[in-house]
Length: 206
Image (tube, rainbow, N blue to C red):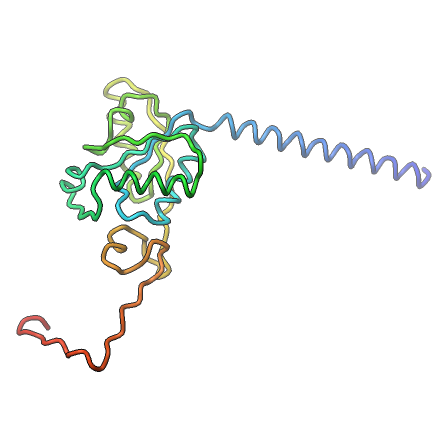
C-alpha cells in the first residue's frame, strides 16, 4: 500500500476516534443532567459562615436543580445547646449574601427548622439529602420517618468535613472562640507587651 493510502486510513481513523470521543462526552453530560435531582435538601445552623458551609452548599447546588436549605430556629439551636452569635433573621441575611457571592443566581428556598427535619423534607418531593459525614446518620433517620408515612426514601449524599490548616475540622464554634478564621487559618493571639501587668493566679486556678 502506498504512503498516501496509509495516510488516508490514518486520517479516517483519527476522525472516527474524534467522533467517538464527542459522542461519549455528549452521552456523559446528558446522563449527568438526567441524574440531577429535581429537589434536594440540606441544613444547619449557619451561624458563623465558613468554607465548610460553602462546600456543603456547592455539593447541593451541583446535584440539585432546586435546593431547600433548612436553618435552625433560635429556640431549636438553644435546645441543642448551641451558643450562637446571630439570631435567625441575621443568619438568613448572611446566608443569602454568601450564596449570591459564591454561587450567583441559583434556585433555592430557605425553611425554618424547629426540629431535625421540616415538613418539606418529610412529606415533600425532596429526592436527596446533602449532609456532612458528621451528620450523615440523619439520612437514615429521615428515611425511617418517610417510610412510616409511605413516602419513598431520599438519596443520602455526604460531603467530607473541611479541615483547617491545623488538621482539625472547621466549625462555627472554633470561629466564635477566635481559634481560627472563616478560611480555617489559625488566629495568632496578640503578643503581650513587657509593660502589661502579669496576670495574678488565684488559688485553685493552676
